[in-house]
Image (cartoon, rainbow, N blue to C red; front, side, top):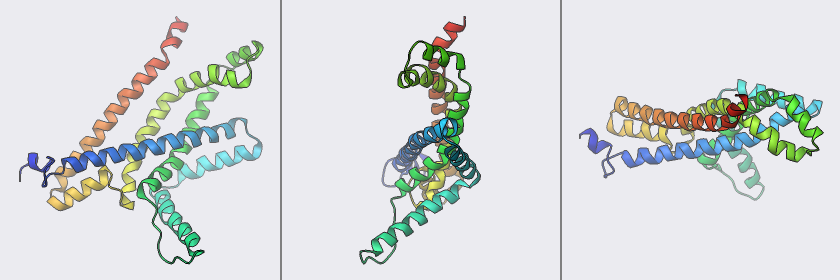
Amino acid sequence: MDYLTLLGTGPDGWGDDLAFGALVTLGVALAGFVLGAILGAAIAWARIAGSLSLRLLGEGYTTVLRGIPDLLVIYLFYFGGSAALGALFGLFGYQGFVAIPSFAVGAAAISVVSAAYQAEVFRGSFNALSKGEMEAARAAGMHNALMFRRIIVPQLLRHAIPGLSNVWLLVLKESALVSVTGLAELMRTTQLAAGSTRLPFEFFLIGAAIYLAITFISTLLFAGAERRSRRGYREAMR
């Protein structure tokens, strides 16, 4: 069987399966990245403006989640979550293993890990802001909500985009670990194709090429976003 047939969309081809796996990879990575950004912003706020207990809690979160292997976090979510659901269902007389959807497990595990990295990106970006501009905004009578929307967020994102780009690439690689839960993302699909056709080298190279294509496009998008965010800043610095 030739490679065009193997990569086609017919009954003997794996092209449609690989394309669907790539879409699942993007879906679980995007879900984990967005949820991680929300959680990371909350953790960054706790470390910047929170009480002593909140600062210690935020610091402990980032230290622990950056120190634990990502695969272990996925296992904890998958088996720990299933055990918790099993205990809950047991209260109503159900006995047995309760599985959590693999996509939900992957998105949740990726989000809590990426939140630790995104929190540090947001915290560092906030510390890079000009304190004089915030003092000027207060002197001009801006309330906190308006200052946050007009002064802090635009500048914070300008500083944060390069770091968020690195976190996104990390999330893409983490998504491959979700294959251990049985989710048919790109890595899992590539493994199945390699095992079914007995062409592991060829299909793993194809999988690597698809990951590199996603990475390349993502890098271009983040680079464009960074240039756009700095457009007014460059004009002001001239």
